[in-house]
Length: 178
Image (cartoon, rainbow, N blue to C red; front, side):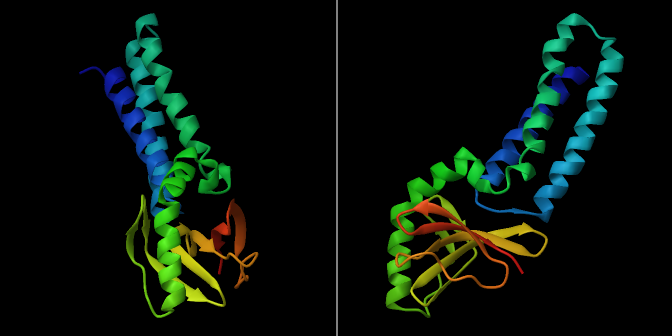
């Protein structure tokens, strides 16, 4: 198989994989490393392939896919949070009823721990206190974590460097900073 097709398929798989991973609500340091080093590897493969293809016009349509894939994925960290990813919003909306049921169960038994799949999202940890329930999806960056908070009585209480973004109906996206 020629280099142009290999680079095209790798670029598409890399982009789709990272965008799908970003839709899970968190984007940790390992995902950033895959983003950076995968992007550099694709760029290098792209340059080698362009040199070998000697800019043949038939190859140009393939070679546009790699830089477009790299550009699309490179924007993920600039999107501030997974909130900008429509796939995350879709996954959360499809999971809203499951999260509401889990939040009610937590309020009834604060010692309960929800770990695993809740609807279309995976929860790594959960806690209930002072009328709010936090569901943490995983790391965001090196030491921070991301998830959602259900606080039907109003904005959730901040701890440390927390930031909240409303999702509606008492739900907030949580960036739990330390």
